[in-house]
Image (cartoon, rainbow, N blue to C red; front, top):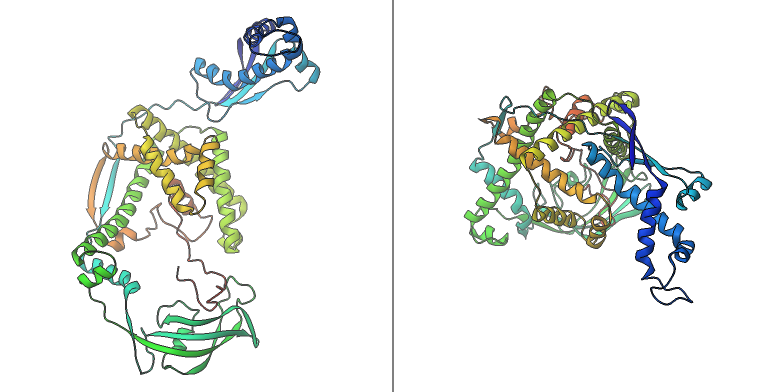
Length: 492
């Protein structure tokens, strides 16, 4: 096999690979000899088929298998021999001339193909001792724990029927029928619907008009659907709801005690507080970690400046761009609505893609040199987390990861990255700083972690680059008119 470099331009490489016809024929003969004892051909006893006859009948198909095998396996061997790593799967080009291809299958001419790829640039790691980060820490107050417990306890709150008029905080049980222009609309009716006044579950103005009603009252409530309401036939429309009040109930007092804990499935109030405190600390801890991670990535970005493989950048950009356009489509907005243009947005997100790829390569090199590995147990946990996100689709998810080449990498990559960040945190200079929860969660104008409202803003690009795996903050989505509660805004 002869390998000749025909292009070396930046990270781009192109190789011409030639395997002499005599070598191809020699490999074919080996396979024919092996097949002679296995094939069954009428008129010949097992193992007695002449190789020449076998070659005439099956030579081309066996040679085609050999060609496919070479194209599949030799590129990695060639790159390994050259001490190179390809950023993406190398592109293989062969002759498209049928007559020439036929001659290759007959071992009449040399088998030639071309490999085109981009190399992963060599990265010389630099000392991490100069990296300094500030880790913001929030001390969770007892009042905050109790406040959170009371919010959770709302689901377990009991109500007792009252004879008086409904007030803020009372639960009203009612039948209602919604109409637009005097006509009932789909999903606008319900029976025995329960609504706590002040919960803001229904569209604006609805709950306010329930204040003062009592059991047995009949009333017509007039409201206007928000202009951004998802159901186009209702958005911005004035609607009336014929209400029949069936019951008014007052909320019982909530106390943090063992009885409340028991209603929530726990053995004691102390255990309830312990769990809630742990949840709050975990939430703050996630924000703290992301801020620290961004500080590390910012400094790594300053330390390492090199050209990233264009193929990886293009692929990353396409992922980002697809999500941006999906977000715009779902919100019904355009780039102009976000005070930018498509051209400006493309430029910003191209920079973002370049940064992501470059930092990804740096983290990969750091992890490889440090011997960071992702265990099978960690992969199984990640797969289990995926299955939990898609209830009822477990089989499809499992089939996808089993049968899709490279799919497991999407599980491995974030785990590997977080383990590399852990490794860096053990090496860099970390200063703890106690802050309030408001300071921890605040959006700083100069902080790349800011989640701006502009879909194509520079700060959003920076935030995305720093934490590709973190979900974007988004305005709560309102559901289209539910079948049972069309007037109700989604509380989810």
